[in-house]
Length: 172
DNA sequence: ACTGGGTAAACAG
DNA sequence: CTGTTTACCCAGT
Image 1 (spheres, protein in one colour):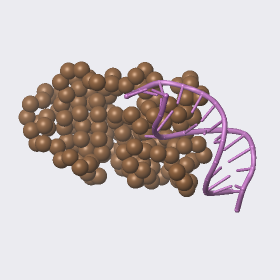
Image 2 (image 1 turned 60 degrees about the vertical axis):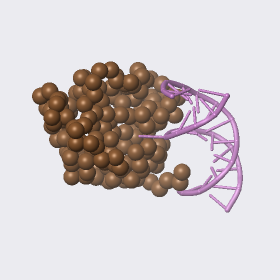
Image 3 (image 1 turned 180 degrees about the horizontal axis):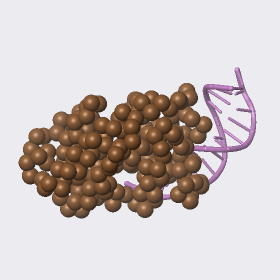
Image 4 (image 1 turned 90 degrees about the vertical axis):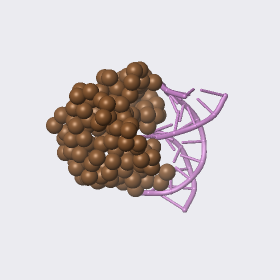
């Protein structure tokens, strides 16, 4: 996992309260608004350094922009050290997908030089620690079908809709 | 050894 | 042209 002290934080956005976790290297995790309401004393406001407070602000702004289909002006540093080399390669490849565009799992696989690792790419997508900012939602199955989304297909659909991406029906 | 956010080819409606 | 089945691929756990 991640070394050193972790700093949880709540990121308020128009789409709900996201939960973030910062490591000493930057933003390490981001979670969609969900059930467990974070304990107030877990928020960084009280104990954290100015550095982390700044990252939190950047994260909040970047998130708000992304949720509205815009390109964030600045991103906080992302700590991907929790992933394997393969996963990090996948995440970086996803981060390079422009707003409003999509790629298939197979294309990502090709991009990172493992043309046949499409399935492993799917797995790496699911392991993406920082959804939205690392746009795992822009990765679709071949031929414009939506594929899956561990954080909930509704989120994937909503994010894509906000970016104006047209989808195709899906059976699954 | 098994799983999964996949895929393409081969058939069936 | 869509829906199902089948066989393969591959990193993570």
